[in-house]
Length: 306
Image (tube, rainbow, N blue to C red; front, side):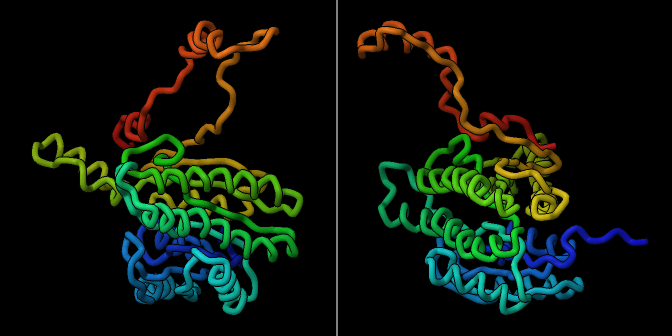
């Protein structure tokens, strides 16, 4: 007897599903039995323009493989349009069970050169969009007392990176949003988790491939295709992940990491209280051995993907 597909009978909304990681997740969820609403505005990487063709291409890919899909080209970046996206899932398939918050844009710039427009554009899509789409679906999840959120975060926010203050802030905000959803929606049996995905497409510009050793390394990195992140998204959206909520995972080629969340590292106490001078003399030196370095994602994940 054939094993039942993990997402059979479920309806998934995947934002930013017109390409890359979002497309890979949408296709994988369809292959796992879900009906998928493919949401993508068809904008450039920096958020300009719009086109239905990326979403249509993902829909066609799903249907060629025997799956069910519909599209929405509404933006997640406003409350009204996010509600329309969720309504499109209900209109197309009659229910909603899964929300994957993947939509995003990049407006990278060194902090002192970042414009307010660059800041707001990225926050609007990543963080506000994550809230709007999640909140619109929450009404239905609460009524049916079931549902799963999968949010895409990033080590740029969890750890740090150059030139991405807007993106890093949004992605760390998404991790906090996910935890809040997990706490508030647990009584309705709704789960919320994050994935910090790795993919070759984010790394192409800075890695040389001139020597044989460098070429071999690039070949290994190129194996981090977007689809490597999809199995974790399917699992977290499925009933097999029952009881798993409020967690942050990272997926990197064939590696899966459970990421830490902020907790106290070290403490110092003085019964009489503190003055700035006493902090300088006693507290700071005592805490300093536990200070975290000013590192970036590539410093923490310093080995090639395996």
